[in-house]
Amino acid sequence: MKIQISGNIIKHYLQNVYFINGHSYAGKSTMVRMLAERYGMIHCGENFHDVFPRKELSRWKQPGLSYFDTMSGWREWLGMTPEEHWKWTEQTSSECTEIEILELVKLAASGKKVVADTNIPPDVLREISPYNRVAILLCDPPDIASTRFFDRDDPDKKFMMAEIKKCPDPEAVLENFNSWVSYRPPLGVDWEHTGFFTYTRSDFDTDTREEMLSALVQHFGLEDEK
View 1 (cartoon, rainbow, N blue to C red):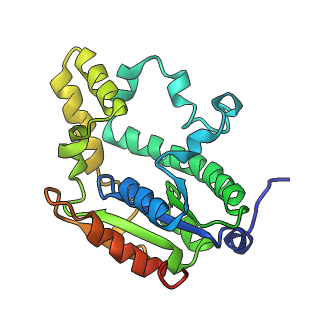
View 2 (view 1 turned 30 degrees about the vertical axis):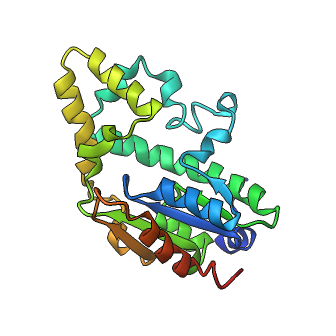
């Protein structure tokens, strides 16, 4: 028997969970952190599905999440075409969704509010969460990450740039890497028309965190729930 849990049951157990999804570089991680700090919420940051033990992953059931353990090297991954990369991210997102839902059920059982920077796609969120528990953050232009990705000074991005520089033609590899962001697959998520509340970031030079936070607090009704 294949295990399947109905959306209304999951929604009941996730009633204290607030979800933020959307474009890269839209401010998701920053907003989740700020909401958690100011409203005493449990913080589930980017890629919180990584709490699941890698040794428990199956290469057959979770091929996307297992890819980095099976690839021949970073050059193989960096050589993916935009279409190949999109297919891999879709597969990985599907696998992450299962882990994230179960992790959130576990955390929500404490009775505290939880805020998550999530990979769970909008069509699934519609099944497991009400409108006022989901926010989609967008960028204008949506492919801004292709030119600003390496502006962020964090270890993962430093590592990735180092791997790109090891390739025979680093400039071509970097161009291909950036093209992943701007690739528009025919079946990709239409982030602007998910039916959920959206907030668009268009100013990338001015600190607009407080304005964005205020909009999210109002949408989530966090002041009303104090």
